[in-house]
Length: 308
Image (tube, rainbow, N blue to C red; front, side):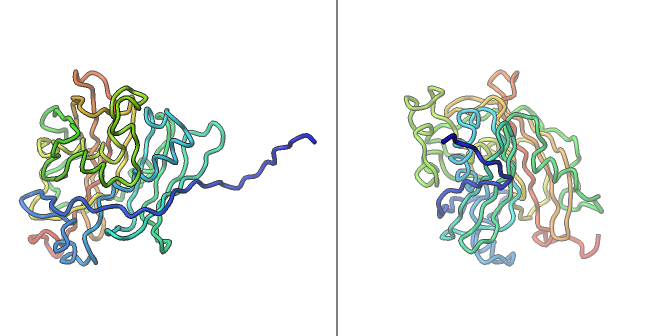
């Protein structure tokens, strides 16, 4: 009997197991104070507990996207996410990815808690051919009334200099990320020999996990000179990591260039969007880009006016 493939338009979805991601930013500091990831700070702002850092959830999507696109995902994949609900340590999270049609280079992703509440929504894509979720979100930013905490920032503003970064296995990644890659790999939800064994890597070197690319890009962020008034408390609202000629490698020297590409505000926050280009050691070739929207709580700034 001849096999016939039935044609349906039913979206097929890949999902991984529930995971319990670990909190690794309890000791995070910036602007001379603790961050939202400290329990006391979080509860002072009305949260039930200190949230896990958003990029942690990216790791759960990598096995699913490699299943779809293989090696190309590591080399030219883009994960573009909007964070919806915070996760605290002990909560379970599951990742979902729609299986794309043949030849399609963009698909929809999301993560849920065990109770079904959404953690994040995202797009995943290959190359630079499709608008990402964050491209679409930036295009819909509402006009700014008046910025107070971020009044010293401007769209088009560039970092003070080209910064130099590296991530060694046992390198402490600073006050923003008070841990090393090795410590992260002891706690990462999805482990891979690509991260730990050059002999098993397709690139003959250990590669930096997707969630740690944002850590690499933020390592020297303080050198950019982007003034955010303190004391104030912020969080990652949106994050996109794009590989152009990836993956990035452990122990390799890179250069970083930064530019503020958008500013915005909501009822509760002021926000700024920074695009950080990660280049090779010579500064000639762009290897990856990180687009980060940092939202700062208005009421966390003691001198915020009651009306603006």
